[in-house]
Length: 182
Figure 1 (cartoon, rainbow, N blue to C red):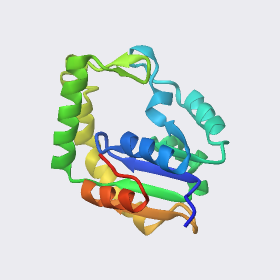
Figure 2: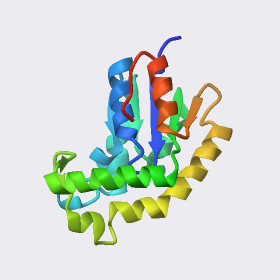
Figure 3: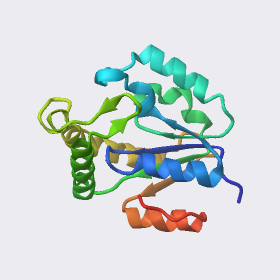
Figure 4: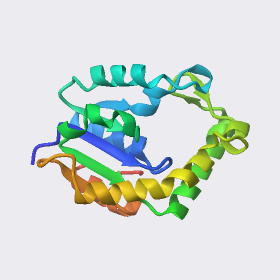
């Protein structure tokens, strides 16, 4: 089987989208397009939607890519061209624990994200922009979206893979010739 040329990895925050897309980038020689890296400007400002979609439109002109992210307003730019959609549809409790650990680690280490921002304890836990609050608000919506995409792929030739536990993702990735830590 030849590798897909245009892949989208979708899931709630903390599900492992970026980790998996990095592995697929290496495995299948794809250009990785991380939507959060396009969206976030310094001081956690968001790039305006029109600028975001213009940049994304340019990036998807490459013949081989893997996109990770959930920006529905921009999905029309690449959705119908996809060869594969991978849905990381993990249980809330699992993702909550994973995201909590990641957020605490990033906040404590003041890790640089997307070359311009650092996670902080206050922003991550004590504001309306909290990543933990975002998970609570969006997890069910992402699950329902995953079920819908599984039933109705973006096009006739698109393969849809829905993983409900990281062990499934790991096994599939191993079958593709790459071990996983998602």
